[in-house]
Length: 199
Image 1 (cartoon, rainbow, N blue to C red):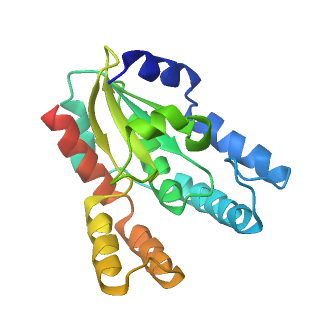
Image 2: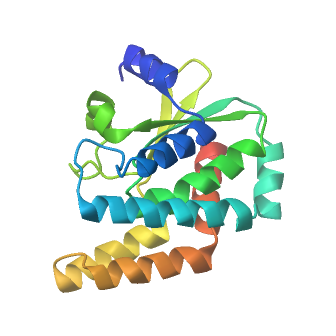
């Protein structure tokens, strides 16, 4: 993996607050993040902005996660590729921020997919530019693991639905958001901590 690409991406990376502010500023202009602009993407972005506002107020980190974070003895950076219109990103990026806020050893940086095509192309999921993609980087800027675009349980839900119905439709997307709401970020916490422990 090209360390120079990782380093330049980290330099461009936004803090969570900058990411949220970028989305809100664009929404005030009637725009979404990303190269493509459409009414649908703007609607998704508005919905996701409200969703993230709610999650920032309601998400809680589990005792198990806090204990695991205390046991970390190396520094990590989560470099996350996301966009404001992405429903999965709206559910996942706030919990990534909460994990980072609760550990002095984890830093969170966010880059927008369409502005970082070279980086995205290095971290495709089954050949597609699926987001959010979390690249876990050590203190020497080496990539030690990747995670995403969604928790393992949700990934299985998507695969099973696709196998049965051929496509992911609006009905399933609604069901997935309901699952995220019930899960309260726990699956994301569990998945990531397993990866950090193994690193």
